Image (cartoon, rainbow over all chains, first blue to last red; front, side):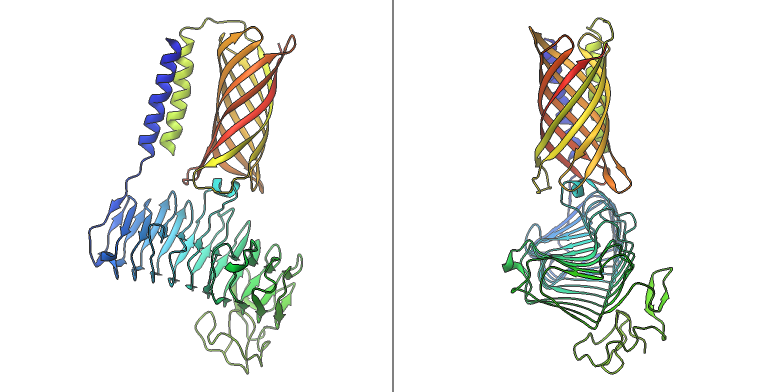
Length: 348
Length: 171
């Protein structure tokens, strides 16, 4: 009798736990413009009746936005905060193409700030702000860390975003798994692992371009790694004109397994590091015209992480003569071959 | 997750109070428990299925004839890191025959991050065990159960436990 009561007691508590864990999602009625709304329950946007939807000035407070089977959605000026889970999920419930995320903030997020499925090609993330994302350590301990942006779709454009990662113990600021452009991002204080990492565990494409990024005080700078599934590799990988300062370990790391399947070019970067080798590679790479140093090469304000160049910097005109370079720098200022500076900033 | 934490605590307290009503007070013996084990197949979203290995030590006092309470710590090796857990545990003696004793243990605690080692999370374990008396004060024991890890940011995992150890009656 006593044992029966005991098992009843346990059964009752299990049921209560299951009921408490349920978090119902809001389901949106068809509309073309969501404006000035605040969501405190997860929001699911699914179906092509929402194509070309604009989500503007909305707040997702403790609520994940989950999108699938919908194309050409623009999310702008939105705030994602205090979320136990992912901030924004794209493509997990169906293909979502051409999603644009601009001027949004992701603050105090447990899992990934933005998480995509492979089913999210041709998307853009621009001018967003990420602070204290990927706070949950359990996934990291289990070998699956979270990131500021965790992107698996092809041909993504991740430009001009800012990452403040002091409280992110694990995971990268940007963890990209496919093809596209990662440009003009500022990443500060990434502990534990990379500021930007490419890990080829999802299908890639023609190219991956990592350029004009500034990484300050990161554990590792930029990483290119692969589980050696060669069919996933991008054919061309360019890491150029980035400024990486004071990473605890190497500024640029290339793992083994890319030989014969990916052309990797690393050039025009400013790489400052005093602890170990600046570039470490276990695959064949072409690296040239990188300004490598163990001390300040003439940055504007190294104390506060401003990696713009002083006119007197060693990096000024360091890459003159190169014919392949980004047409603009991190601030959108033009570059030219004659007075071409190394790193993310161009002094005009 | 906070509601789950409260429910688990209530569940444990309820279990203790329920059985304390029908137990007689007995001489308070102290026990030392040392166990090694592994947790594997991790349910949930974490797909890296490498096992967790652990070595744990706890000290228990027999408050009632069938219930022991204790505190413990140890070293847990996770797929990507290691941690130092601290926990409180209860042991309920479900049945006893000859040299065999069947028991249920429940423990609640924290995984600690110390410097660059470890990670922050709550942990809850439940095990069904069998011990065999091999000496005047020594038992060998095997346990099967579960390990739940979760944190306040929504991270969580559930794993199956298998461990072996020994229990020694200190006094």
